[in-house]
Length: 367
Image (cartoon, rainbow, N blue to C red; front, side):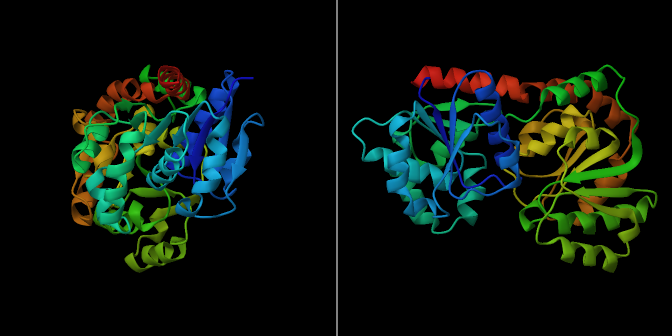
């Protein structure tokens, strides 16, 4: 058996990056490329979805910075190493720096440098470490054009070379459903149903969405909101819905593994994030042929560019603007027609099969 690709990640709790890594690891192993997953903590519901061929190790819950020696040992037998988050980028590159012959290191960035550095701990120290260590990587991987270059500009670096790799998001079933939607034979839609999917965490703005939905209901009392996701903030959000008088129109649905199916029955997908590096759920909404209203974050802005009424961007942390857009766009005929026509075609490059093939080609290129 050939040496595995080592993928480094904090955990496999449900989230956009975590689900993408799970799908990538499964597809690579299914098609004959061995994968070894190294987690900081062996934790998360997505562990149960891994194929048995995917090897899994963990660092006993230690933080990335205190795990450099263990990572050093783990990279010995790897064909290449892919780091899934910024903190792991630095730890992996630090471990590789003390090896005479380290495998190629692929680091990744999924959010804009301005947003990340504005919220990161010790930003000046982190920036210094990135400037020193990032040039050692074989590639800087980003999911959209321009994002990797933005990081190099922010850090005043000329390298490493940037590679744009699509996130593995859409399964074969998702692609099949998307094709039916594009052909006009998708599921029935409820024009008054608004769907949102994401962790119930401040970064995703569920509190903003509830405030906005109250504004939208003032204009269209027939609207309903399905809020998918889990998180510690759910009790506070339920209380907020009661306080706003919108609880009868809001359903907290929990987790779903069928995002495209759920979105395909709606008249609108709403994203209220305070920050969003990419937005896998936006791709799922595009695949579902469903119009999107999203706050002005880097990833959604790039994904929705040029979609007209099918992809409307509103200011961040502005419930009035978001609520007005929801009321105007949900089930709107022109937006639905444009979303069905353009969305599936834009989303198809993010299929799991296409993303895994692009990833494998990059590994072949650097190793």
